[in-house]
Length: 118
Image 1 (cartoon, helix red, strand yellow):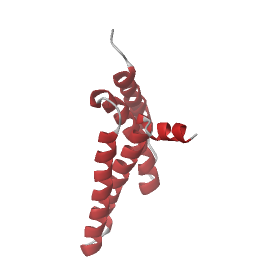
Image 2 (cartoon, rainbow, N blue to C red; image 1 turned 180 degrees about the horizontal axis):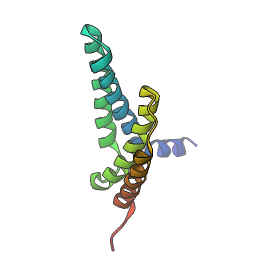
Image 3 (tube, rainbow, N blue to C red; image 1 turned 180 degrees about the vertical axis):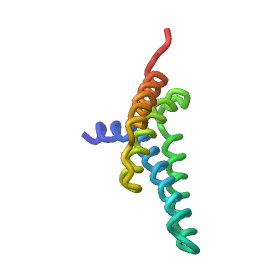
Image 4 (cartoon, rainbow, N blue to C red; image 1 turned 90 degrees about the vertical axis):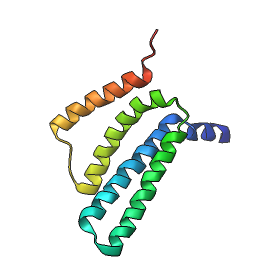
């Protein structure tokens, strides 16, 4: 049971989900700092955002995948996570063009990550 849990925790998709969550949340925090805070509060918000963005870089590079293949899956995961964070943080639902483009982004990410040339 423990071995199965440890194997699950090393799954590449988990690293990508954590990385994209940290990147999109860090970006949203910095954006809020730019437009909603002033003075020392703004500086504190920037530090929190910077910590999230550092975490994103760390988790993305810890993913047990070849970097060239991880990029496609990462971009697809990033698109989905940006839409979630955009809705939660800014109450902005994706429009039809964003959804259609998102389908293309996800399809492209799958091609880059999973298509194995002969």
